[in-house]
Structure formats: C-alpha cells, structure tokens
Amino acid sequence: MEDFSLNWMAWTWQTAAFFGTIFFMLASMLVWSLVAPQAPRIGVLRIETTPGDRLFISLLGSAFICLGWLFFFGAPLWGGLIVCLFWFGAVFRWV
Image (cartoon, rainbow, N blue to C red; front, side, top):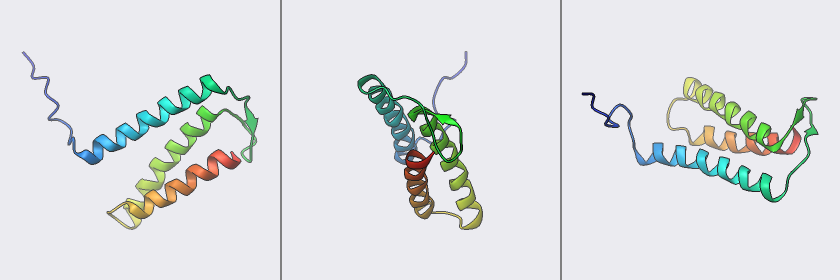
C-alpha cells in the first residue's frame, strides 16, 4: 500500500501563505462577480477581458516576473514581489 503523506512538498509557512493568497484572490473574485457583475472591457492589449481574465494575466505575469528576478538577482524575492504588485495594479487598471 502506498504512503499518502505530504512529504513530497516542502510545506513551510511561506508555501502555505502563497497558496492561501491565491485561494483568497480566487474566492474574492467569485464574490465580486456575484455581487457586482461586470461587463468585459477592452484595454491596451486590444482584447476583451473580464476581471477573472485580468487576474489570470496578473498571476501568469507574476510567475514570469519572479522567475526573471531569481535568474537576474537571486533570492530573496522581495524586490520581485514589489514589481509584481505594480504589475497587478497595471493589469487591472489598463488591460
């Protein structure tokens, strides 16, 4: 019989905070869309996006920003996190 423990992943408080934050953002977007549905809009990318699309673009871009930060500057990722926060703001404002 297989062992179904979670030892295959380094579950630190930072890892739990990361996944908890993603879950919180997804849950917040769900509540936001139920309380105040929004029509899609066209931003600087000239594509029609909903708030959920913009969240996905923000998360995907943030992953690449953090990978780039690690490549060019190494750990820690605090500077990359600040860049990601600006990226989130820019995507939700202009995309």
